[in-house]
Length: 455
Image (cartoon, one colour):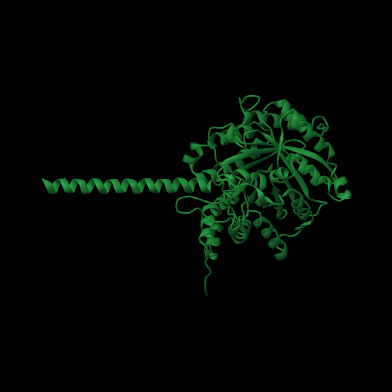
């Protein structure tokens, strides 16, 4: 009788042994980011088979889309606008109210010519990836109706006419680019498209908000009316004047228009509770009485814990992600709903402080008994991925913390940057310094021997 030994390897190890990347760029991204995703899935409470399936999809269908890896000097022609260091991927953890996390991946598909004269704005690869998903039937329920409508109206018609500069790639990418996400959801995957409408706005000579409003209002009448979006658009117009609110990103699900959610991302330099409550009520247009007093206290506490003692109005001209913001969701038959997102890099000295503030928030909630064990797992995952030295060095892992009102409490999401490019640059610099030290040591040794020879 032949005994069958059980495979005790981790899902990441199994996928790594099954897939042989023949492309050095693919191998680079898998080694640097696949292990990050694996740790998050494990500590978020995904089953062994769920971890394996998600890692396999990631290896086969996401890794090949992440573009070239940095060269031996750390140079990368196209840096994504999606994350602070330009890594074309982020990972998010939604804090489940029952103690388990939901992990999502978000990435920018990068073409082989991105950043060159042939494709200065990485315009084509996202479309190619989405068409690939569609033709291969890889995502059940994928619908390109709104994809065709909104990309036609929100992406620039002639980006090649823009005057190129040395810094153009990173500075204009947030205005011209797109990126996609795939939710790793227990109910099945959902693909979302995110568009930066700024360059199209430049072409038309109007604001980002005006471009977005035109795109929504040009939907087929039945679809447009079902969204009941005018109260939100009216508020965004008013908030642009009142708070200096800017529209930055437009997003939607690639599902049927009857189920797809549109999200409009905004930000302003204000940090006051008045600004918070004005946005949550759409300037008084939205009745928030359906939310419990506890839920409203939660969102104010979350805001105060992460904003801290920042001035009421942040200085302008700082980091792109400095101001706290909101994204507003609209869906057929539903009222618009606002959600908070805050960039900790503006308010925390390092990622360890972000973890401390998260723990402070969850420890003072009504369901602390369920959230604190999840907090423990989250900290274990981040210590495994980044290590305590990096978490204490600076604020780079967390680039957004977000919360949304639910009936009785908040839904919290944290967004993580793998810091792949930053860490690669540091590794190259460390190797260079070690090589220089080794060379100096050899020179001193030769000098010493020469002096001994002379004497």
